[in-house]
Amino acid sequence: MKNLLSMEHLSNEEILHILDRAKAFENGEEPKTARTYNVANLFFEPSTRTKTSFEMAERKVGCTVIPFDAGFSSAVKGETMYDTVKTLEMIGIDAVVIRAEEDEYYNELLEGINVAVINAGDGAGQHPSQCLLDLYTIKKEFGTFDGLNVTIVGDISHSRVAKSNATALAKLGANVRFLCPQDWAGDFEAYHSWDEVLEDSDVIMLLRIQHERHTVSKSFSKESYHEQYGLTPKREKMMKSSAIIMHPAPVNRDVEIADELVECERSRIFQQVRNGVYTRMAIVETILKGRE
Ligand code: CP
Image 1 (cartoon, rainbow, N blue to C red):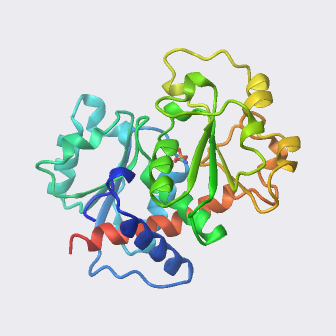
Image 2 (image 1 turned 135 degrees about the vertical axis):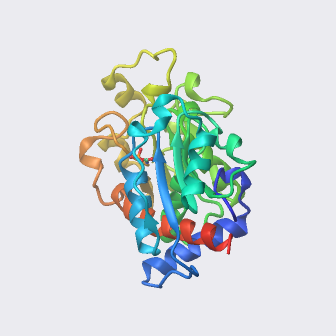
């Protein structure tokens, strides 16, 4: 693998390799890169987890992290993504991690750029590193994906997490279902009632409402969304005893999930964040080694 752009591009073997390396890192194994690489994180959209987690992972695999503040870069003067990345390449950067609001922004980098590109989220397109850490979390829990019922709940059409996970989980043998208002189903067939998915789900993956990507606002109050589509304590009690709750975060408490469930026994929400560091170490190592 020379870049990580979309889960659509990864084979099951490539996915499983990254998950194996994440496990090795969690078990204390040392990274296997041949030299010290220079990396930069270009976040043109806000981020807490992904940016910090990539920086931690890059340092742990022995990279030098060159600071880049998108809001104070020449992008605000109109410099293109291509010219920004080409400039960093000439300065000596080996890999860039990029989050940007345009779907498939990376297409303009596929020709003429020689640094590795890791997609940290493109618009409502893909979020492959979040997907891989979600897969790692599920594999740690169940040991397999085969036959698992994974229910993704919420703003499906605006969510890059939903799309990446739908692609990858289906390829790996899981049964992926969606629960959301019809307006947010996008190209997916969706359920509209918890009754149809609650009791046989192995994983319930909740999503934030992506208000920033809505052109027409769906008329839900926080209370009515929570009542219809939120995971409430009453619904949590009806889940299978072995089922887990996931959420890529940031979480809007008492909207998609009741405040008291965020850290309940079956919630893996903060473990996902921890797993993200091991998974991103595996991603960075795999991409850099793929270019040696
Ligand atoms: N899950 C996720 O992408 O979180 P951030 O927006 O904080 O990076």
